[in-house]
Length: 89
Image (cartoon, rainbow, N blue to C red; front, side):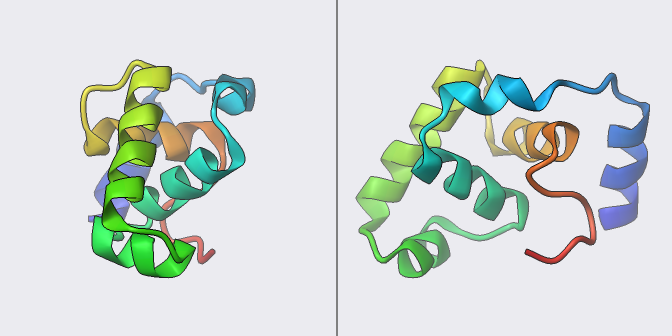
């Protein structure tokens, strides 16, 4: 799966990291964790917040970046640099 995403994102036009400037620090952290494949419960545990708060962060990320789902969020994270396939956090 990692190889497939890496191949897809390497062919996609790069998006500048400035695109993420609309996100708060917690939203950027949420985006990185989404890209690592963490569930809302896992993100909540890591951030020491409720799942409801994580859902709010995820919703804000999707809305602010004009994305329709978590898959697009992962692709955007890979394209803009906060994470990449196979790169540990």
